[in-house]
Structure formats: structure tokens, C-alpha cells
Image (cartoon, rainbow, N blue to C red; front, side):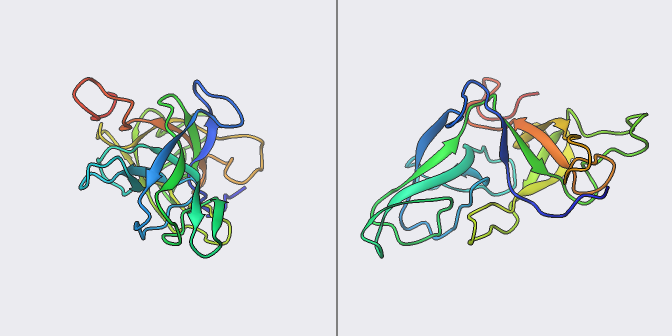
Amino acid sequence: MANNNAPFGFQQWYGGSGGVPTFAEVYRRIASNNATPIYSGDPVMPVIATATGYITQGAPGTTRIDGIFNGCEYLSVSEKRKVWSNYWPGANANGDVIAHVIDDPNAQFVVQGNSTTFNITGTLSAWGATPIGQYAQFAIGTGNAATGRSGAYLNSVGTTVTFPFIVRDLRMFPPGAPGADPTTAYNHVIVGFNNEWQRTNGAGPTGIA
């Protein structure tokens, strides 16, 4: 069955050293004047230019990522109270925004692949060419303001050790479920962190070879 093209960002698959309900989330901060929305399931990266410890929505490249965004809390200017939200809308906070971020270096996530790169070529019984073990780049996509959910997806694979993720597996169950057909486009992929701030080879966040 063909998969649907409906990206949903990076969704927790395995918690690493943390379990439900938090999956070893940590608190990070978003500056209240950061006008870039951040959606649940988006990769986040440091605001390097200011060196203040703030994070912002991740951008594809080889800059380190600091984890996966999983909602936030802040004092709402319009509502005059603290609100909890699936996403940071880019405005309406009085003071810093407290971001919930999954940054366990051993965490794994399920994410949709693109139209051509992440599905198996050839027959499934022969396995064919597979992206498992390769480094992966993401595209940020378009988030959904109604649900707060990310539109990020995987966009390319290669041997660049500073890509943010590494492909661990392909989702193939339950049979017939959206994204579970690894032989067609837009299949679901299991990834782990690669170029993440807690995964370094001793020379800074240059990826795990």
C-alpha cells in the first residue's frame, strides 16, 4: 500500500535512558523576541550568534542540533497567565519561554522520508539498497498552527558525518499502516541523533563516525 505524504516531524520512538511520560526531557529557553515559530517535533539548534544558551528552530545544515522540541510554557501577554502550548507561535510571551526538549543522545525518533531517498530499492525479499546506517539531513517543512505539530521530514542521506541524524531502521509494522511500506515513497524511518550537542567524537559536535 502506498504511503501518504503527511510529514509530522520527529516523533519519539525510543526513549534512550528516559521513559514515559517525559522521555528525559530537559528545559531550555527561547527568547521572547524570537519571531520564528517552533513546532512540536522540530529539531532545535542553539542561537550561536548570541552565545546566550537560547535555542531556535533548527535549520538544515551541519550546525549542531540541541534536540527535538516537545512543547513549551510561557507567561502570555494576551491572556495574562501561564500557558502550555504544543508550539511556540513566535510572539505573546512576557519573558523567556521555557522549552521542553528531548536531547537524550540515545533517543530514537520516527520521521517521514521524502519522495525518493529513504525507501528500499528493489524487492523487499532481497532487501535491495537501503539507507540504514547512512547519515541523514532533514527539511524543516511547514508546521501546523492548529495542532502545533511539525512538518519536518528527512530529505537526503549521505556520508557527511556532520549531518544531524543517522538512519537506524525502517518502520514496517503494522502492515498496511501509513508509512509502513518501505518499498514506496514517504515511508517512515527510524533515526537517532548524530550531530547533537551530547554526541561528539572529542573534537566538538562533528558527528559520530
